[in-house]
Amino acid sequence: MRFPKLSRSLRKLSTHVLAIALGVLLTVSTLQVLPSQAEPAPTVTSGDTSNLIAQRQSPASAAIGSTSFVTAAVNRVGSAVVRIDTERTITRRVDPFLEDPFFRRFFGEGFSQQVPSEQLRGLGSGFIIDKSGLVLTNAHVVDKADKVTVRLKDGRTFEGKVQGIDEVTDLAVVKINAGKDLPVAPLGSSSNVQVGDWAIAVGNPLGFDNTVTLGIISTLKRSSAQVGISDKRLDFIQTDAAINPGNSGGPLLNGLGEVIGINTAIRPDAMGIGFAIPIDKAKAIAAQLQRDGKVAHPYLGVQMLTLTPDLAKQNNTDPNSPIQIPEINGVFVMRVVPNSPAASAGIRRGDVILQVDGKAITSAEQLQNVVEDSRLGQILQVKVQRGNQTQQLSVRTAELQNAS
Image 1 (cartoon, rainbow, N blue to C red):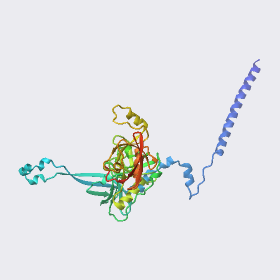
Image 2 (tube, rainbow, N blue to C red):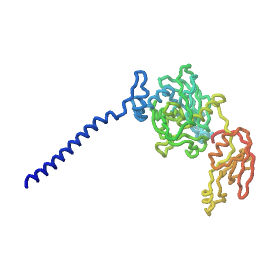
Image 3 (cartoon, one colour):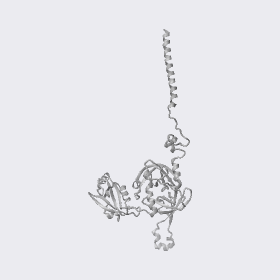
Image 4 (cartoon, rainbow, N blue to C red):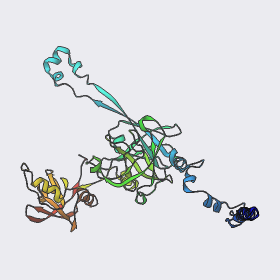
């Protein structure tokens, strides 16, 4: 009786041993096959490593290599970025009491002639755009300056002469005499810039020379009205690359080290938001400033507001509203400047501009761009709605004398 039980136990044990042996055999055979199925490493000749780099190195690892794209971009343009120091003497307003004849007789004529003055110093950035010594910067950096000093990265300093200023676009051209061996910043094209592209700001923020910050392009075509500087006519590039006082006039670069904008403004109530003038706009303005020393801007002479049906409805339902506004899309005229082209053409406060030369106008920025792109003295056919009626008015543009 014991032998049959023992034989059955032996058969079970032998079966388990056989299964284990087969499993080990299959595992070993699999390990021997796997290397032969792997893709062979690329063969590279001694003179060509491009294929190996392309297959083994991702863009991210390339950017974090021993020399990053930021370093390459800054090295390409860095020597052309300059520091601009300005000095300006202002005279304080004399107290009318000092002009009183009795006071002058009592204290003497010389006392009232001692007019107090104050020296104001400014700091900004710029970059060389021509070997002859042309420097592009912001108008507010050098405007009304009595003395302009341009300092190169290598330490050389030169007296700068302002060749032209355009307050409307906040651009200026400064000339230095430094021979013809000056480094020049490579200019790119802002029309090719996309949201999410790299943005590299170079300049002298807060007096810290040769400072570089990195970010991305946050958005494009941010209007000057949205930025809070309605006296300008610009659509800015918005970036989160750190921009601080002193960066003004410095270049904003793309990942290739090409200038795509000019750092010009920040929002004091926000962090990580800066604005740059597109380089394509700057190129056109710089050429006019070199040639004529100024830029002629056409204007109509209205203060305006983008009107939507919802905005008009809010006004019309307010019992304290002085006027009723058509609940339509257009540009609402808030004020007409006296003796302006708009005033001469008969545009009135409360009108809603609907079209210019047959093109529908739906925002104040759009109207501003249409006027900016027109010629001085050009007659624009402006369709307005006044109350329940529409009128067609002819407005001849004139030259804007100043930013205010």
